[in-house]
Image (cartoon, rainbow over all chains, first blue to last red; front, top):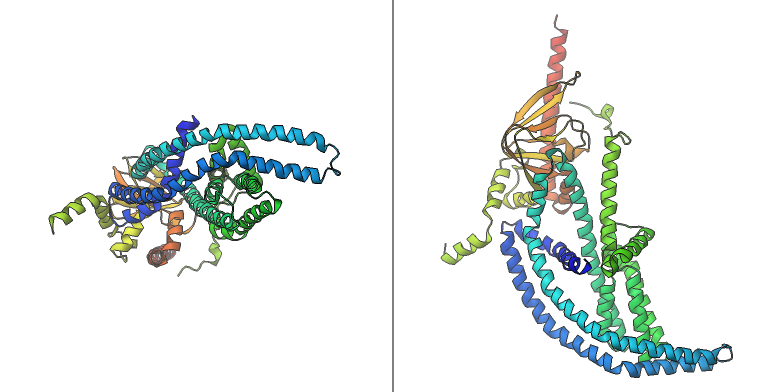
Length: 334
Length: 171
């Protein structure tokens, strides 16, 4: 189910991002289908050009990481053992800890090496998505308004205003949330990549890209990538100052995100309480896995907006909430 | 016009858009707008065809949209104190109704039913509110036209009230 849903959900995301541009030109009197086809032609050419530059760099880094992983894990092991030996007096069970850690590190190395081919197959399925998602998005873009017109046509006339109310509110909230999120994630990814490059960490581009993508999973994503980057820094440089450097970069980027990017970019999107967002993330992760984590925040936005509107209708229709009255006694009729 | 231009026009230009824009230009509250502004207004409108006898809205429901008749006829009715439906007016192509919903989210003061198959544009309040923020110039023209219309109606009502009072005083 998850595999089937993924391309459709991603296509919806792409549609939301591209639709304002298509609508802009459609409102100048051009046919929607012609505009989408033209945009695909331009975007296809541009993406092919960009991919020809970025993919060789990334595909070069992954085998390099696979080749250097045993050596890096060895140096990570040495650093950890040295630290434990230095503090042996303070740690009464240090002699037991070293062999236990050794076994665990060997197990982790084996698991990592074994899972790298899975990463490669993941990249292959990513490329199949790269074809499937634009294909589905093409139909969403060209026929999306027709689907909505059909919905308006089949719903009873007296409910059209309610449908429009919910549609407008969801459209506005979701659209602004997704557009803001894309901009925010791109900036976070770029800032992290620049910071990691500055502290001379290998694979800064891959880590920057991962940090940008992880921004779609609030709170959890950047923490996981940060931990991975800290481990890589310890393995590469062999001392804790490198880890502190990584921590400084991630903390700095999070600071910029929380204090500058979010207030400026995300201010127009729906304000979800952190507790509600965390609950949505946990429920999404539990029932739909990784896809659920990505969709948790936008689905929570939709549920919040729809619930607010339906509650308002319920309260007005049952008389629990009285419609506002104009101060007629103050109105002078001339 | 060269063959190339004709071909591009045939493939890229939407004739339905031009037709709808032309029918909008006949609406009194949109008559002050130029072609570009009309195209922008069209972008925020929704469209629906109502069948003969289909309810568009009922009296007492909270209104959130203005309806513009592109084609067809719409009857406006209001219930009297005994609850009987009284016919107020029949509106035709180019007319609009429900404009009070754009100013205040209050219960509808009358019901609207399609008299025949009618094609209607819906100007939704929240779409108009968002639109006005982006295009204040068009928003000002629409608001001004609406204000003039409402002012005219208030004037007409007060004249009617005054003449009713005078008739009532006449022995």
